[in-house]
Image 1: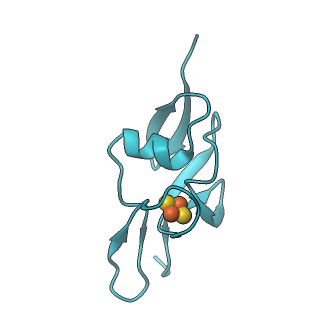
Image 2: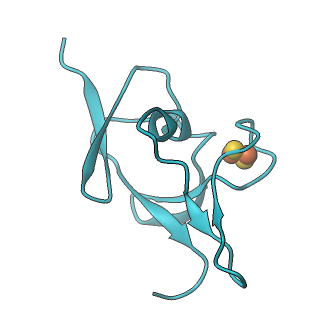
Length: 86
Ligand code: FES
């Protein structure tokens, strides 16, 4: 069976069925998901249960999505969330 993957900033992120997007990214060593608005410090998943909002990502063009609360799906496009204009 082929492994499923999604896209993350030019990389293919392979995942097992039932994994969250955050878990899949962590399994690939990606820990920084967003930057804070004022100090531009990196933040990444902490609680993994929808409480801390440190796992925010842009998923299929929609910002402020909690990576820990969304199941990974084949072919979706995921980017880091930056709270300031680039
Ligand atoms: S890791 Fe805390 S809300 Fe997602």
